Image 1 (tube, rainbow, N blue to C red):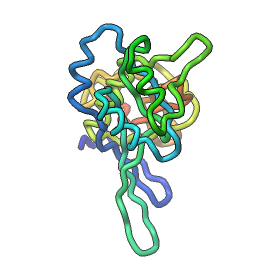
Image 2 (cartoon, helix red, strand yellow):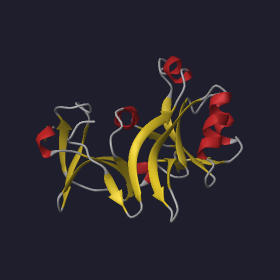
Image 3 (tube, rainbow, N blue to C red):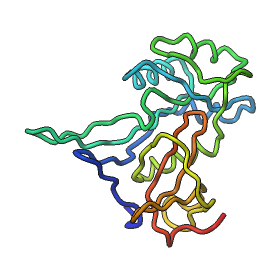
Length: 197
């Protein structure tokens, strides 16, 4: 791991991106022009079940997972949890059959929408989150949106990812906003690795 990315610690837990649950079906589908990424809300603690169910139906889904180390009085255990609890992403055409397959799947609450219909997430945001997870970057998702200077990572395994540069006390982060969720993905960065976009 690059020294410029370090572990985010919280009481009794450490968080690190591990992997995404995705299959080869997503690669074939990405060539179709009408496909966009949408956010699926699931019932509590059902994200992995829904992800598997959708993949079994041939639907491209993306469940970003992170690793947390939890300390109990007698042991330390590593668990894999969703980066966005109760949410995952699907790559579908909302005018096709997959929209109904997703909407009526067991343990799915809904596809997030506004008064005009389902709201898509930008492709580059999904791509950036996948790259951060694949590179085992240290991630966390926080509620709310943060504003900072627009920057691009100029070196290291995350080179080319853009976001907003945020500095809090001694920590520096690159923030990617997922507006529809009202959440922001933060990855620790070294200020030497970023430049204005």
